[in-house]
Length: 276
Image (cartoon, rainbow, N blue to C red; front, side, top):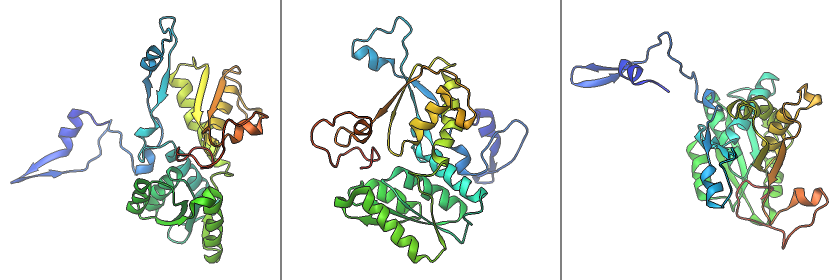
């Protein structure tokens, strides 16, 4: 954040008008491109919610929320979008101005990809179910993305099938980042979100609650804090209790873990949650 002194320093007056002058000086911290602003989001005190539900907080109980909404495109998926594109660029799999990025999405990941694609010069084509909100579609179009809608009956699997169809027609000039399978998904949360939460809570986190779509956030954060020998991470709090929240209408994880679904299973109204 620029201080008032710095803000005054970069605004110079010329005869009859004000002119914005960009300058570099010692002590000024600025991002070189929009995607550099991804991450490092703050925590906010949510103890008011506990009090409203009659939960005692005088014993030191603390509920905090991480404001991923303060990212460039207002979603935790900003991290995923940058991570997957950074990873593909580093591996030489995609080239700005040449590669077309194709991806099925329910919205937020698509917005993040469109944002990074525009910044770096990629054509971006996203497929998504027609049930996704008009606001999301407008956001994608504003970012210069091409949006292909698929029938609501086929949900995300239908969007995935359409993305593969488009990819085949690009004759080797397209690339699918595969958010549901890409290791760069949980990796970015092991490297950024998890460490940020641990530092911001001064290591006092006991329970981590996260909505779940691809599972990248809940997996990466939990691996960082609970430890993951596979990724060379020592346990910081092996007793961390992780809660993954999924829509009642699509209790996929619950059923995978041997639980029973409650009520009818099918489409739901939580966009980006579960498999839509």
